[in-house]
Amino acid sequence: MIHRDLLLKMIEEITMVIGANKQYLTDLDQTIGDGDHGINMDRGFRAIKDKVEAVKDKDCGTILKTVAMGLISTVGGASGPLYGTAFMKAGQVVANKMEITAEDAVKILDEAIQGIIARGKAAQGDKTMLDALIPAYDALKAAVEEGEPLTNAMGKAVEAAEGGVAYTKTIAAKKGRANYLGDRSIGHQDPGATSSYLMLKAIYDVLTR
Ligand code: ADP
Ligand code: MG
Ligand code: MG
Image (cartoon, rainbow, N blue to C red; front, side, top):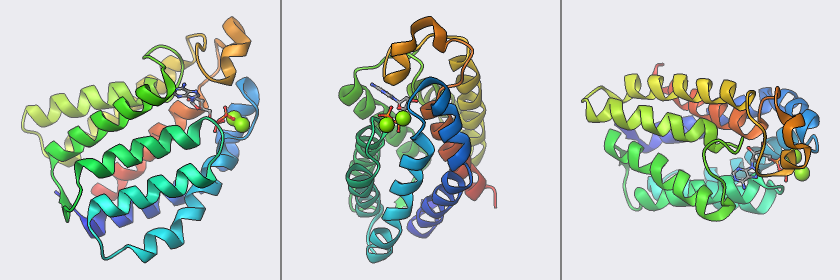
């Protein structure tokens, strides 16, 4: 169970981790994109800080929706509307709820992924954030259905996301700017898959504290 206050800690941790990896994400995007992914993400998460602070006494849905709107209006690039949609969909799952159950967490990741697909029209294997998120969802769902505690299940999701990030090195991009490189994108890790992994890892790290 994730209480509202723990959700706020997770958002803070994500902001910290994205900030710490700003250069790393930007370097990855320099290789196969336009070299701004870390800059975009860091700008977005720094911009939501005050907005989230203003709704910290509200329900989980309101908090996630606030993150979504902040990211949409500040991240820019392909990833802004995609992550914004993901957080928006996540918020709808827990509208008016003060805590998030393991089952909610599965639904949240599912809805977030469906939102990203609806908006970006990418599929698994196109070398995008989905290549981290979909394996993470599959692992989370399987573990929760087997009755594992959320923290363990999330640990498996993070491992699966990490595997997904490694997989992006082996494939050619079919979506986003890296698509312009075609097969020359093979051998390089996708920045968006990497930021998705980092966010899932941040959530897991808060759960294990
Ligand atoms: P931009 O490419 O517009 O500069 P960013 O650099 O912030 O945006 O984000 C790039 C990342 O966005 C890519 O590494 C990829 O993971 C993700 N991405 C791009 N297009 C799509 C899409 N259609 N669906 C899902 N993810 C995408
Ligand atoms: Mg970019
Ligand atoms: Mg850009």
